[in-house]
Figure 1 (tube, rainbow, N blue to C red):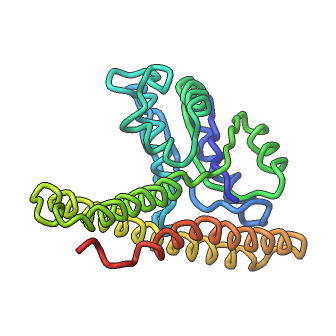
Figure 2 (figure 1 turned 135 degrees about the horizontal axis):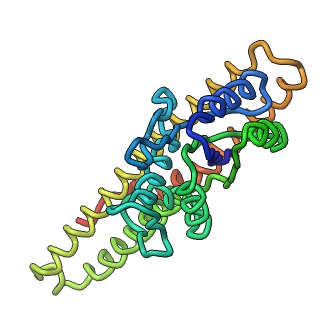
Length: 266
C-alpha cells in the first residue's frame, strides 16, 4: 500500500535538494516514488504549483493533493482556510477524496502555511528511516498518511443504492394501477437513468484503476534494473503488495458492477 508524503521546507531553495533526495532513494530502490509535485512560494507570498506531478503516471493524485493544499492555504483572501474554518468543499475535496482526515489536513495546512516549499509525493517504502534521515539532514519535515480509496467505496455504495431503488420500483410495478400512473413512470425513468449514470461512473473508475495499476507496475519493473539483490527483493515485495492492493480496490467495484447488469425496469 502506498503513502502520501508531505515534505515541508522552511527555505524555498531546499526544494531542489528535496527532489534530488527522492530521486536518489528511488534510484537505489530504498523507496519507490510513484509521483511527486512541488509547491513553491512566489514574490506575493502565495504558494503555487512549481513542478506538477509526472503526467506519465495516469491517475496519480499528487498534483491534485498539492493543488488542494494550495487552495486551502492561499484561500480567497490568503491564510489557512482549512477544515476548522469550515472550508470542506472546493480545494479541500482533492484532499478528502483520498482519505485524508480533517485533523491531518488541518495539521498539514498549518505547517505548510509557515513554510516556503512543499513536496507532495506518493511513495512506497519498506522502512521510513532512509527518507526521514535524508530529509532531516537538509532541514525538511515529513508527514505521512496511508492512501485510502474512499472514492471507490462511495461509487460501490452508490451502485448498491441505485440497484435497490430499481428493485423496489420494479416490485411496485406489479400493481396494475402503477402501470397507468404517469408520475410513477417518470420515477422509473429517473431511477433507470440514475442507475446507468452510476454504472458508467463505476466502469470509468475501474478503467482508471487499471491504468494506474499498469503504470505503477511498469515503474516497479523498471526500478528493478541495476539495483542490489537486497533492494531487488524489497521491490519484488512492493510488486506483490501492488497486486494485492489492485485486487482489494477493484473487487468491490467489480462485484457491484456485475450485479447491476440486468435489464433496467421496463
